Amino acid sequence: MRLDKFLVEMNIGSRSQVKQYIKKGMVSVNGTNAASSDMKINEDTDTIKYNGKQLCYSKYRYFLLNKPAGCVSATKDNVHQTVIDLLNGENTKDLFPVGRLDLDTEGLLIITNDGRLAHHLLSPAHHIAKTYYADIDGYVDDQTISLFKQGIDIGDDTPTLPASLKIIEADRSTGSSRIELTITEGRFHQVKRMFQAVNMSVTFLKRISMGNLHIADDLPTGSYRELTPEEVSALSHTI
Image (tube, one colour):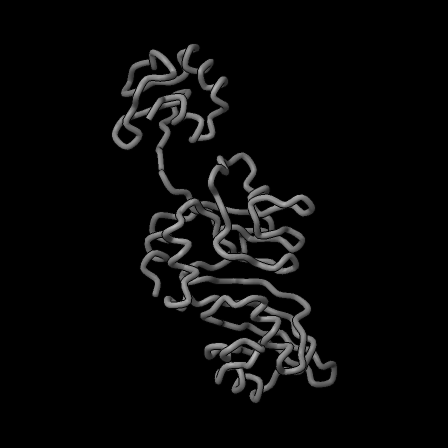
């Protein structure tokens, strides 16, 4: 790979900017100041430093975003802010969200440029567990739990797969509930449609986990972090 291309991909600057950095002696390769911007480097084995800080190259990038409501799960949108827009200061080239959360839904969303992992996580054959917290307009009881465990007819060709519904709080007098729901599919508006099928509605929805990943309390809405190598490995082997 050309050195200037490597530096651009590492988000050091634009092509013209990194050329100036190289001319100023701010970039070294294997302990020696880089001679030119077009010199060839091995991004996997060479030691490249910018301002004395070593740059570690990774072909694939993985981020966990705590998506806010009002932000669209897309790479571009003419009306709304996108989830990619929230990755301030990152090199967002080729990044895309893995699946989607509705515009008004919050919570865990993986963003990557690894198409193979995305396919693995979204494939219906792998049944990746996804857990949601929801506020419900309706009284959720043991009968509701039983219905969800059997699978719900939401108007598709087949009922949903069995889902695990947990009641956090349910108030019969107000007809409102707080729940957690774990599903292993990703049908269009699935959580909302499941509750609509039992004459209830979702008033707030947040995805709190996917596979081995969980939204931590110290990751505010609208914030993100990189996945650790251990997390990526665990996701890749989740079935």
